[in-house]
Image (cartoon, rainbow, N blue to C red; front, side, top):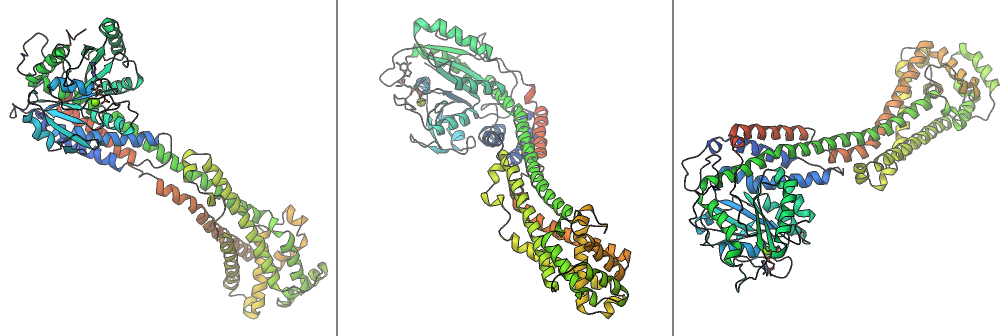
Length: 613
Ligand SMILES: Nc1nc2c(ncn2[C@@H]2O[C@H](COP(=O)(O)OP(=O)(O)OP(=O)(O)O)[C@@H](O)[C@H]2O)c(=O)[nH]1
Ligand SMILES: [Mg+2]
């Protein structure tokens, strides 16, 4: 075969879509290279994608991470370098199923054994790029596919790109022999996808046995969606089946809107001693590439079409990433809300407990009755309420009990309540997260229970609150005769009465429950306090003590909730991720339109007539 010098003047010669310059027309550069807004917009997009994180385990996260990875690869491997050098040689990536004969075909097209073909599947593990000696500088310098280390030797390492020059190949056209696309080897598959995304032209090789496989069609649909220029090779076709298989494949191509892709049907044959196919088999394909190689404008049109298609596909792809980023933020919000709701519920229970008198039951009530019954409480109060004492002393009986027992009863009652609500909230938050895929991934067993130091913190909280109440009594009663003239004990006793008042109800109005449990006792407390401080002062004191307690409880529960919230905060993507992605995607789309690339006519490839069928 020959890849040189074929005329491009036939009727089916490539149609000039637009001049974009070529290796031999460096001065004739279009606006695309002079306009740097597209590279700038792409760099912006590259940064936005690089900054995007999809840490929460949502169904959309893994696909988004993968899509972000391949977009970044495509920008680095192809779009950015291609835009910098629109006149760089056209790269034909040869892709397809394992054993389809890709390496054999490449070798035959360049008339040299540049890529090992073999019977062991898969044979090609590391890509081989073959170009004209005149173009090797461009491919060697590594702008294109910069992540692959250039080598001169055959390699098994998928991170290398073996460069081979073939004098039979004219300048301006290069072939890349890729690993198989549907490999059992993961690395092969991933690499093949990456390489195809860096192609100016896909040469897709399939066989009579494999052409209906699902994986190639998935890739082909993706390529079509991106506007990539595609040519198909149906390889190793038994001559008797050629017509039928070719017709069926053509139908499938048309159904997938790929009818415009030239189809070359190569009959099954023997390879020669070098493993090359006979000229007569490859002739139609060789002739087709020779025409392309000879026509810089046709090559430029192919480059522009694939490039513009890839650029046009960026915005929808980035839109998908932005949606996934939105989902991340929504999920993080939802997880936070589940935790907040659980701990709001806990706080409400405490609030409710202070209203409905349930804290006045049992030990606290008994101790209060004892405390009041001892008369200690009243001993220090003014004489004018002495009669009240008499009445109360007679109303309750019991052994003398020091104030500390009441204080401890109040403390333990409150601590029990706090431990209870904290345990319930932790469990609710845990269940709430467990039912959410992203939440479940953030959980660890300890979160189902309150923090280890919660009991200790609850005790400290209550003691500090009790001290605060005493301080309150001192300050609020500061200019009253009572405090001035009574001992510290009176402050203590009054403080305890205020605490009981907080437990009874906010407004000091006995509720049904109080009447049933505390009965006259709590009424006595408020009566005493009212006598000492006056009605309004008592309301204020109790309200303040209550507010103080609830505030401390809120802080405690906030710390409990924070054990959860810190996890979403760590996992939460930046709030403006989606917006930054959309903005960058729009920027690229606008720059694409401005660049004039989008105005190029579709590359009209020469047909594959006489393609061996
Ligand atoms: N008889 C015959 N053998 C062929 C033909 N094309 C390829 N072969 C043989 O089929 C085997 C596989 O060919 P390769 O070119 O290695 O296939 P490949 O598509 O590169 O395979 P991978 O690198 O594994 O993806 C080799 O042994 C080739 O010699 C053909 O047209 N006729
Ligand atoms: Mg191969």
